[in-house]
Picture 1 (cartoon, each protein chain N blue to C red):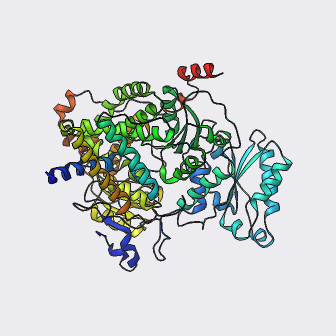
Picture 2 (picture 1 turned 120 degrees about the vertical axis):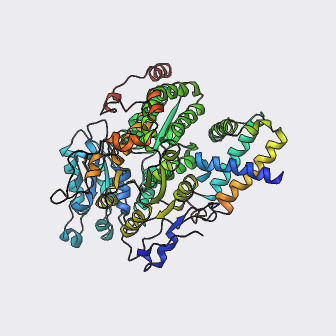
Picture 3 (picture 1 turned 120 degrees about the horizontal axis):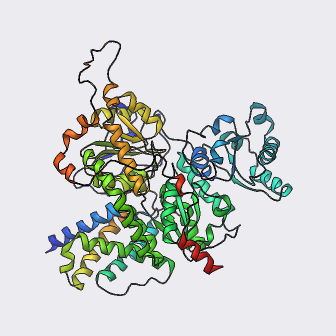
Length: 116
Length: 520
C-alpha cells in the first residue's frame, strides 16, 4: 500500500516538475507560499470542496490549482477511483515531496537570499 | 553528485561542479550544477557583461526611446541586424544608436559635460522622441560620472523630456544576468508609478519578460487582445516608455522569461499587490494552458478556449508534418537562459526530438532546476561552458543540431554540426501556435538540408558523383517515416506567410473596443 502511494506521489511530482513553473520561484519563502497555496487549493478542487479565489493572490493560486487538478484527472485515471480521504492523504504526500525537492532538499544556493 | 568532468577542463578543477549528467533516479537534490558565479580564470566564457544584459537585452527593446550609451563607442555595438527585437514603429530603437564616444581625455578630465551635450544633441536631432535611457558603462562608472545628476539637470531645462538612468557597468555581476537584475530594479524604483495610463478594459495585464524577437510579442498580444484583455505594457519588447511607467495599474503580471524579468514582477507584487503568473509561450500544450490560465484569472476561459481551438485546427496539421520527420533527431539545447526550460520538455514531447544536452550561459541555479526537472534522463547539463567544453560535448554526443547563440553557433558550423539561432531565431517568430510550426520547420530545414550534406566536400579535389550525390530532403528525411500513414493523414508543410507579423499591426479587436466604450 505504501509502495503504491509512493509510486502515485512520484507520478504527480513528475507531472508538476515537467509541466509547471510555479514551484520554482526564486526564494525559499516564496516557494513555500506557492506550494502551500496551490497544492491546498488543488486538494480542495479534487475533493469538490470550495477553494477561495477572492483576492488577486488567491485567484492566481486558484488558477494554477484548477489547471493542475484538470491535468491530474485526465492524466491519471486512478485518481477518480479515490475517495476524499485518500486524495487528501495523497496530496499531503505530494506537498511534502515537492517541499523537499524545491526547498528543504534543494541545492540551489540562492534560495536564502534575503532580497530579490 | 553525478558531476561530469570535461577532459579539456581537467586543468581547471573548479569547472567540475558546473556540469552534471541527469542519471536514472536522479532528482534536484542530487543533480544540480553550480551557477551564476564569477567565471573561473582560465576558462573562456561565452557570457556577456552586465552592461550588455541591461542595455542590449532589456533596455533597447523599448521602442520610443533614445538609448544613449555613456562610454566608448564600441560598447554600443549590438544594434540593427545583430539583434532582432523588432517594433511596430519602424524599429526606431534599432535603426538609431547613440553613444557619447568617450575617449582618453574624457577619462582623465571627466565626461559629464560631454554627456549633457550628447543628451541635448540627441533630443534636438530627433524632436519627435521625448524619452531617453542613458546607460552607464565600465568607463563612465570607474571615473564616477554622476549620470543621475546630469539627467535631472537636463530634465529641469527641458521639461517635456523624461530620462531613465541605468547604472549597470559591465563589471556589475558575473554575467549579463547581473544587468537584467539592475535594470529591473532601477526601472521600478525610478519610473513605475510616475505616469497614469489610460485603462480601456476591465481586464488589464503587463506582459513581462518578452522581447518581441522577430515578432513574438505581437503574436502573443494578439491572442490577449482577442480575448478582450488590455496589454497595458510589455516589459520590454515593442514596449512603450510611458506605458511601462504605468505598470502599477495592471491587474496581473504575466511573466514569460523569469530569468530576465522576475525581479520586477516580484517587486510589483510586494509594492502594489499585483500577482505574478508564469507562463510558457512555446508549444501547443504549454501555450494552450498558459492562455487558459490568463483567461481563467479574468473569467475569460471560454474566450481563451475559442482562440486555442481555432489556432490548433489551423496549425497542428502543419506542425505534425515536421514532427513526424524530426523523430529521434538529437539536439543540444544550448541557449542563454530561459529557453533551456521553456523548450527542454516540449521539443521532446511535441517535436519528437531528443535533448541530449542543455546548457545555460548566464542562467542561475533556478534555471537549471527547471531545465533538469524537465529534460529526459541522460542529458548533460552544463553551466557557463567554455568553447572547448562545447567542442568536446559535440564530439561525444554527436548531435544533429545545436540550438544556441551566434558565437557558439559559428563553432558548431565549423564542426559541421547544424545550428539554429535560439536567441534571435532564423525565421521566427517562434512563439504562438504558428510560430511553433515555423520553429519545427527551421529545425527540419537545418537538419535535412542538402546543402549541409554537401558542405563536407572539398569541391576542388573530392570526386563528386554527379548522378545521385545531391540528396534531396525526401531522400534524407522521408526514408525514415511510414509514408502510408503520412499520406493518409491531413499533415502538410507550412503554408503561412514569410512575414506573419506585420498584418497584426492595426488589427481591430471588437471585444476591446466594446470594453473601452463602456468604461468611458
